[in-house]
Length: 424
Image 1 (spheres, rainbow, N blue to C red):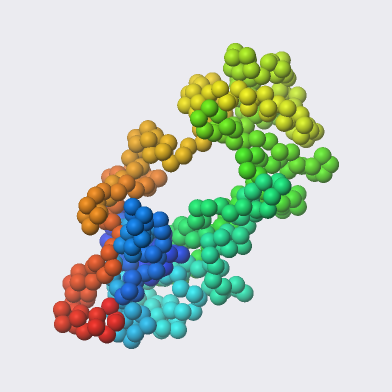
Image 2: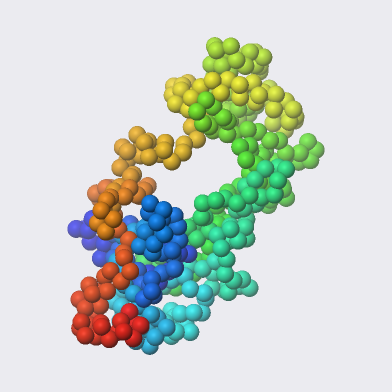
């Protein structure tokens, strides 16, 4: 990185060919300072029609999903299905550092724009391909929605209740996780290029990216051959049968919402001390009195019954309902109780911690006549200024003149001809 640069990827250029399944990758590269050029069809990217929309007004220039995943990018229109469009793309790729795409495996090669062509044109170029299942394997040509993807990645299996089928995790996960891994792979390839001068084809599988989010589920299967799953506000402790799994409450209702709390004893020293302190506090208010002299160190998670666990939890549940999230959290901090509030969007927007970290940033949308608040970066770096987005997401073809005329030297007459021919 240039010592004068204010962002890590300042001076690098990215060509973003992704649809909604990969656009998050380019957004993060733009967060890091790269000059990201979003290339979309002349009619506009279909992702522009993905809701929710600004003030609930469906319009290709008002998609909030588009606003977020294309933040920091400049935008041009280009039809790669035309010979002239492919020629223009190759001219752009000749001086680019990174190309990010999310087409089906083999599509770019069918247009003579695959890595084998780009590598000869620009040996240091990095091509990052983000697809549901990667470039190879029996599923490589499959198309999936987010729900299908997280199901085939094992994530959907973790959500639900013991007496119900798996439930959908509503917020998109499949392609966002793939996009994050795309950033990681791209950055490692860029480091490799800086060391060797060689480019790379980075092959990202969203399914594999989702598997990495399953945490202990894969390990529990490997060791115990038991399928772990989340169960609503509860957690499962896997034990051999008999006695079988034990279900413990992790999310508890309180006076104005919910808190996350683990109670128990035995060898879990932190949880035991926390539970002892919580019991003492509840006793002061006339709650959990049957637990006043309970010897938590003697609790044995290997033999305790579900009935015993539930009876204890019912004692705490009654007390927690008398306190607000703030009251519980403030007391927990001062008294070594492992409890945190379950925050909602309103809580996060008002969080003093996020404010102190300058997490929320405002981006000007002059075409809308106002500024919109966005989440920023969760990372600070030594010697670099606080994160500030480069620009809002591009309008359709907003930077055609800037890039085609100024960067490629096309005349205004050539631009008009290309537009009339459906190339740009």
